[in-house]
Length: 498
Image 1 (tube, rainbow, N blue to C red):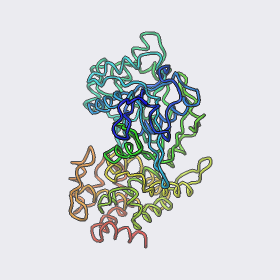
Image 2: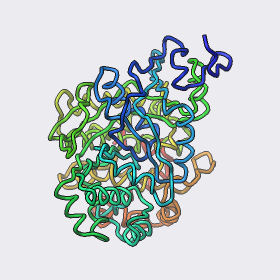
Image 3: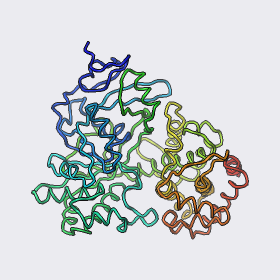
Image 4: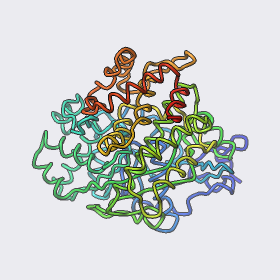
């Protein structure tokens, strides 16, 4: 056996060492040297590699989609470090599936390159302008689309947007780069690529379309019209719990026999639901479990409101109680009961069942997934960016409840617990470090709300017109008073006993 970089019992992950990995680790059965690119993915983190890249890998394993390989990309300085790690291992990734009863691993090879990360995005624009690229997909976080969380309108005043509008050939943002690439394709006589958002946003394709077209109109209205007429922005729903990678995950990969600088752990569950609206062909992801449908909305509403909304309900409470993981939160009797009660009584009454899954059964499925002790998903990671996640994941259920006269006391308590978290101190007195792009504003409002609850609701970019709803004002004030008087666990107990 060749050495190829063996250290102890671990093998450095590279194309040349795949045959030397432990036999229990699955590896690509296709010739990666024959793959050609068809997708550029911007925001290449753990989730993309555990989800979209895995679906493509499965297709390639079955002998399909070899002309759809992924080129990674990023527009943030930190993405350069990810590029370096992945390039050093030939863009291979070890995926480690964590089940309550065991662990398995496979190496996926659907990614074949990563464009240089540059301030003016020249290399990214050139790669997307290549007519071989037929899809540009994104995972840039819920807050990355320059949308006002209260009005849902495009934020044309943001400094990066103003820059891209004034300097369309040297843009800072992913969207500016997309527009520059589409301009180059139009000038060369090529058609557009499909823009596919894979972020947790209801109507993510519609939101991406709004951002791209709004920015394009600021510099080139004719180009915007061309994109609107010939481009495509399908909505999609993505689902898989994928923790961040840290020392424990690196060690787990080594224990399995592979030295991977960027392994990914994930749960044994995936779902991908996509509108079949592509302007330049697509892989047959439905061959390996994805769902193409004209009714993404019901799927995404169920997932975003129960799973993503549930994450906020669980993580904010757990953070205040010093519980480090989501599984640990679900082991707390009060938090688990809080999630179950709110989900069943205040969220799912406003949802529509999807084929093969009732809303009641979905709550049970999410409870099992949250409680998986093998998934070390930290409360801090899940609670990050509440200023985007609460408006997107929880407030729609509050609006529906108020409109239909249904109860919102538990959802109001979830908002009160988030407010209390933004004071920046756990109940044991330890410090909660800044955990939101708007932390300073939230922290100031949380302090003021201890005297006047309305000060929190008056964060207009979060609550919008909800701040003036008398029923919600009363429910929130009552919940915040309960948290102050009884602590988080006590306030939850009061709610559960009501």
